Image (tube, rainbow, N blue to C red; front, side, top):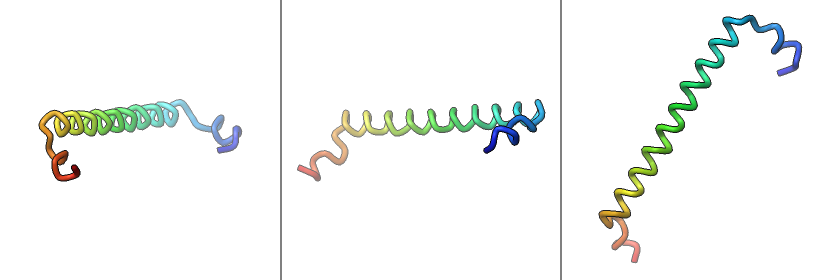
Amino acid sequence: MPESAVSQLDAEALKARKRRNLWLGLALAGFVVLVMVTTIVRLHTGIGVSERM
């Protein structure tokens, strides 16, 4: 976005953008945690390991 377009946003639009970015970041972090926990559980229990070896 050009600099002039960014400066034309009012305070309410900037606040809404920050709120959306916060929720998007939290959703992404939650997904990363879910994948990490799933991976740790699968490695710990050995699910899927014996089929590949």
